[in-house]
Image: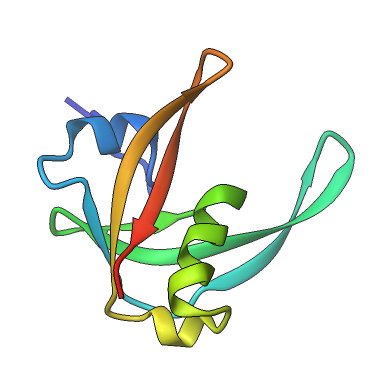
Length: 101
């Protein structure tokens, strides 16, 4: 089965993950993404989850969580472990990341 075989960390991938943890294995890249005609800056982080290399695009809450602990410089995030939880907001599931120092 090609369950969660995409390049990105998805809710399905996190659900299927035995560890729910990912190691940040590179520097974050900021991309301009257009969403509903609005330009937004999206952060993309290379991570390894259950020995699979993926790209993680944290949502605003996850970015806040990580910056609160590790600071805004994404270079300093390398080697740190993210813990993923699934949160349901307005019937839509999303991935929230937290990190320990």
